[in-house]
Amino acid sequence: MAIREWPLISSEINEKYRIFNIRNDRAKSPRNGNVYDFVVLDASPWVNVVPLTAKNEVILIRQFRHGIREVTLEIPGGLVEEKEPHNEAALRELEEETGYSTKGEDLIYLGQVSPNPAIQNNLCHTYFARNVYPIGPQNMDEKEDIELELHPLQAIPALIHDGTISHSLVVVAFYRFLFEYLPHASK
Image 1 (cartoon, rainbow, N blue to C red):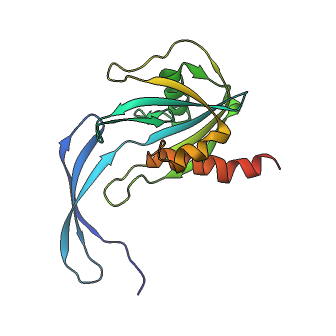
Image 2: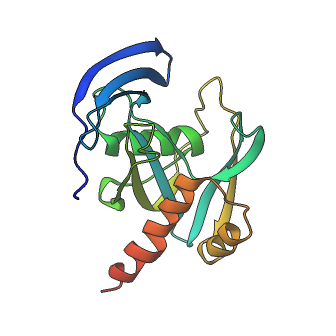
């Protein structure tokens, strides 16, 4: 039997927060005809940026993450603002969080993933920013506390392997970059 879409009976937003809404959906099972309730995190798209200097150093950021109550090592990224193209959001987040930028042709789209399709409806778009260079100080949001670290590109697989880089969307971004983009870039 082929898996089929569940017809939506109703959908309503229960709670609104700055970064997402909590939505309650009722949908009918095409297999048994029963109607079930589902909770969905209705969120804006996100962006991630793999920034690489001309010296093959990746700019990483350390910040405290409230969900796990720990400091993590990540790449720059964040929310796509309403009506903002995701490529512009990627460049904005890079500049705000790191104080680095790149030229337009050096911002390369690596693809998108669904962060958690079981309960979320948004996408995360990943970019590679090559030949990044400093343009000024960081311009963090008032709720951000970010420290920069430069790591050689060749050190990234070990940082993922030993768990130093553990954010799943960052690991996926590096997967896209290291295993999908780099092999094709040399052709």
